[in-house]
Image (cartoon, rainbow, N blue to C red; front, side, top):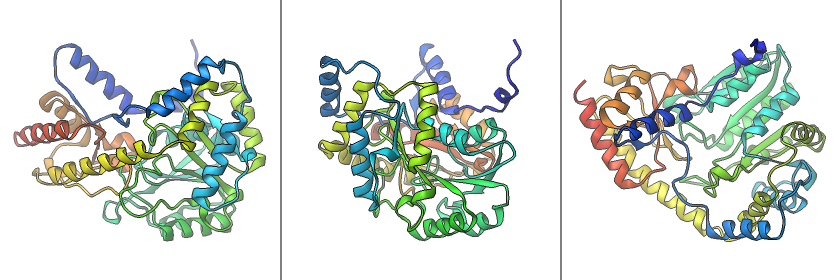
Length: 387
């Protein structure tokens, strides 16, 4: 079999590979504490499940418009308009099976071979993977530990070239938990406007924020015609397996993204979309309680890591990840991740899984119980003390 050359440029998401390795060890009788996977350990709220059940019983099991059912596109448009303070119409919304298709389709639709795309590094690995896949050049915006894992916007200005087509931003951020400030977003908006660039703003963690309010790039003046807002249900509503996401973008682009949906998925599952309507319009208390619990866990794991010799950990402002610096252990981040799995029974991810500037770090998800987090910290401390 001779594969297309583009397949050699396609990356992966290491979290699923590490999860598989951890499951294999568990099958052998080992106890593994899972801090590797970016998935809320909460059940989907019951009102959302009930809405999906009702939709199934009412026969909402057939094809629907590729861009999504009108009722969900309307609910999303109203939600984004209310939370971002901008005018949004349903024709700007495309519903997709998860958030990743928005990344995939936006890059396919706008970026050509030889173009350049600026993206956060360390960052969600699918950004770099998709840029490479289409034959473009990924240009990293380095997230700096001493800046709270924000990139310096002067770096952005230096890296924009005549070939730059798109900027990707993510706030709150995976894997670091960093958050871009309003001032950062204003400067990014200025660069995008001056250089006529599209911006893909990944805001999947917008509701998982521990201080202040989420500031959206879409809310910056004058950027609505050059912004693709990516969001979804996996994180806020603990709906990872439901595969429900969406993009909000200029109407002209939405038409092309819809054609990509038609050519790939036909449509997103109809009954899942009715659950999405209920998620946005129903009670929000379950999500609020989940974020409160994540904050409690964050406030346990960060000081716990900082108490371990050789590890230092910044306090994340959003998402549910910590990104501790482990250079002081004397091991590379990949060797340490393997060592912690085998020696401590704790599954974590090497920071370099999120790009070359993640070297010297590991990512740990605190989407696990405080009891398990405390046990993991004790196991890590014992394992590191042997180095």
